Image 1: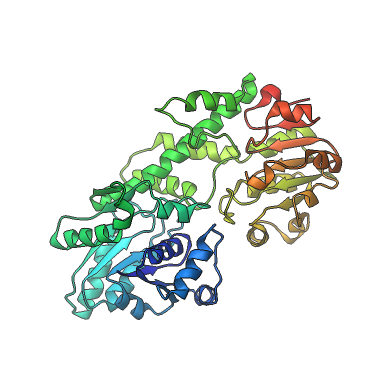
Image 2: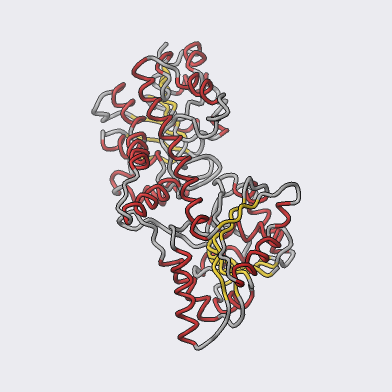
Length: 455
């Protein structure tokens, strides 16, 4: 099939590369010439395990191309995926300007039937707005070309997106019951047929329900995270090990273990933005989503927990003190720093007068860019970007772990203890066992694990 992907960001690039991997002829469009040049020269604008190999393989096979030519992109694909960004607006709602601009461009150049697929995460009702934008362009041109709008939200985890796309647990497709909508459903069924050979993974529904499903899924996952973080903070006060609690409740099949890990709070491009957007949608209908408002509040406060633990241990003023930070990306296997808890922690420590040395296996370049925006030049001068995890430790009062990279799970504790001024570890992801750390001579501070925090 001939497929056009509009947008070569995280969702668009993964979608385009994986659909090409299945044998489709994929045209990826982006208005950013630098990004297109990078892709055409063999580069990748994001870090995502396995993606570079898939892109290179399909470019070499001629199934995947990248261009800024809007007219050519519209002509190419009978199915047009809109996979552009929907950043949060000032009021928390999703900014749809790029989605609607993509729709208008399709309407400006299309001459025959098109299936326009909203792959971007968009609020309920966006399909209607895309349909209107397309129709207005066609009417302005005096062209009577058929089209229909489909919702096909993505459910990709950063750091595992290629695997998630190629082995989906579900495919959600929303379409209408018009003749054009049924024609679109047939095309989408054919496109996703390779994923349904073992068993049917596709859930068919109307467009608005599909749009809502994406937000509901992310809101539920964010709720589980904030729920466990709130319990973890109580566990610290009452002398409970939250890890034991997690295992105990996760064994209940009605609850399960996924997304029940206490930590430093969630970040990234999806959960914070989607929770806010869903709340905004509810306000438009004069409804309060009390649970989701609490989820967001808990998460904002959770990002302050690590810093507060450090201030409680070392004092409110940290002038002359230095700290080592492992992990900057909001989660492992990505370089995404959006809404990352590390940014909040660094701000807390600098505001208290400390200096920091930071390291992340992948996100160092992105961290330099983001922190240059977050901090003044004087503040940025108090941040040292280390060459390795161990390079952060010399002269540090304590080690703080913010991202659960696998490379941090089995470090040389003897070397860590020798390099630190004090054998103190603040573990924002509960990577280590408190009793083991105590045996090794460390003062250990986890999240919700105060029952065995001190040696």
